[in-house]
Length: 399
Ligand SMILES: Cc1ncc(COP(=O)(O)O)c(C=O)c1O
Image (cartoon, rainbow, N blue to C red; front, side, top):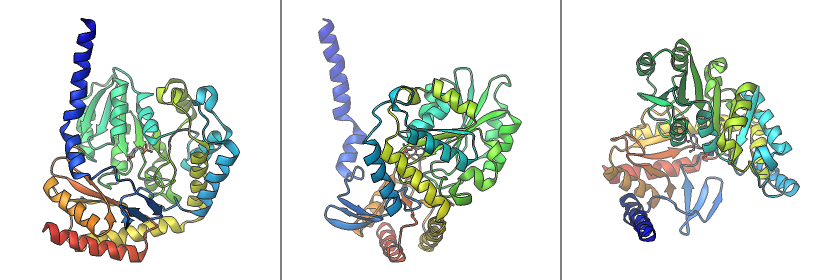
């Protein structure tokens, strides 16, 4: 009896997997999970065709920098492939401490902790500090990892309209004064390319005594002096308690970081499940992040080129009459407004050899269905010209 009940339950799950509508649509139209066959910088090969990558987060274009590759290879030789353990037990290495110290100094913080994924860093930046009975004020458009952190914390959540200080103020005023409050924002919103309105937002956070967490996955390397990020861009280092982010974008590695005061980081090391029960960052990825961080401070030309390319690219899209959702950064969405318009636009770009990613509701707000593009310092003028031609073709196709 117990066995037959179990098999019925299992069947329900198997049917759920087999009949899932979004999976069926994904397999039918195949917009995701393309396995690129070869890559050199922004040149890629897909299905035997040479294409231009226009949606990577390699903002500074360091993933093929000779010093970065060399650092990764040397670390692999010196330390092997993986620490094969979590940090509190057998997984801590000198290179973790070195990277953490370098990141903390760069960000003007006392301490830092690195994880094997930015996703883990961002979850733990919320789940470690908030608990049941607390109230989390969250921008409606924050990344999935931050929502996961909020859910795991069991705190009550109050969402406020995207990047709206007025709505944040209303949400903060609606909270009973006794509950500890945590504010969660992104420095640069990954889908929209918007820069957080940090001066107004941190003023309200201060008035309401909020513990402030900022995910700067897309601001790090892009904004601020030498790429110190959004907080540095506004000169508000003392107004944000925790900066978390990813090593997989401007730092051309994989992994993530949480930077804060020593007390906060030591508390995280004691209490964060993502930190205690997950294997540590690999030696090559740590060395790659360290080499990139060094390059950010010694070779300003990458950040300069990134912004030159961003301005050129945005001007080109604006001239074609495209809606860029007022993006202010190298993450540039092209809003088409419906999946019926996004799909042919994305396909037309693919036809012309331009690799982008489409994002449709509910991954983006209804009516904001878009093709997500991102410029890199590595794009050449010749590539930008090819991109312009392809965009004009896609605009004509979609009408
Ligand atoms: C805003 C934001 N936070 C966190 C992450 C997670 O970083 P990672 O890809 O390194 O796990 C991402 C990645 O897409 C992101 O866009």
